[in-house]
Length: 447
Ligand SMILES: [Zn+2]
Image (tube, rainbow, N blue to C red; front, side, top):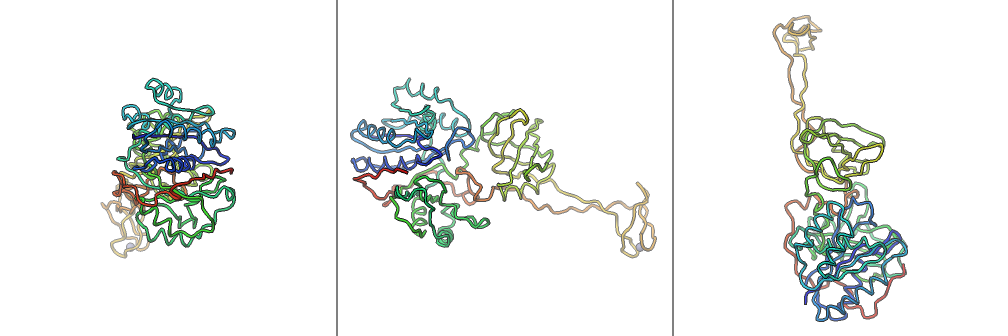
């Protein structure tokens, strides 16, 4: 029988990781004889909600079991055992027999990826339909867990192989050979995504916290993710790894047109014409956009790097679509759109007016006043009835899509290289998608 287990918010800022719990549950279920014909899913939700841990990631495990209730018991006990409730995890889990009902879960996913969803409302929906769930802490994780069941493999998606550390190594620096990462990046281009930031000269596949994730490599196919992983050199004995299918790198949170006035923590886009651009404190750039007669305040921040450099080349009159999340209003500031992607739709031509050159000697002329012509500054020759010359100055910016530097991109950011390379049908399970495949004596992390 097809079964699903969805989890969210099992981690905390102190360590642990929901994807790691997912890995442990999958390993245990495999050892118990459950079959995986679909990849476990790693589902990112609205990155703008204030109550989240690190990446606002939920996990949905999709498998076949002859005794679903036993599988659910196993997962539920691992959840209680390993959730970091003392350090602020507010875990939620949903257990489902049969395919997820799109009428229930799809709207939840769409709401949770671009807005804020009330956890009590979700708990009620599940309860009314007799769907098993469990919560720890304040139970906020029920939102992400239920929402993750609305993400489909037929939606644009990517894959990530996540490798985990031995418990004793957690908290120590991750030693990865950056040359091998660069080489892997070159050889798997354009199928692997954001492994190395050439501008910042920084490896992007390793996190920096105390969590058990050693590295994560994202790609357009499970094969490309695993190939890239095998090319990376590192000095550490790992606990294992698993491939996730994910909505990362798809811009899934930016598809909705934002309603005005901007509502706090929502994500999406607005389109309009630039009215003003002001540089503020910290070199942040504030753009005011005319959206069908309403002025929408927005900002690009210094860490955005490439996006900020590009935004500075915009000017009043340019037509753009601005994508991002809404920062809530404070007593001092109105709600503002934090820009994470800019699409330039139309570039205002820039023109320069200049006095004509002297017809006799070719030198500069001065104006004699409106409609009175020009006189040469050098030879004194007059030119009556001539007009100022108009030259079109080339703009440094073109129609197109612009993103922050790789290191400043979000988990959900769709890389330019993925446009036209969207993946909307799932890859079959490949050999070696999880290692070790069957963990008989599961090592539980203490980090
Ligand atoms: Zn002259």
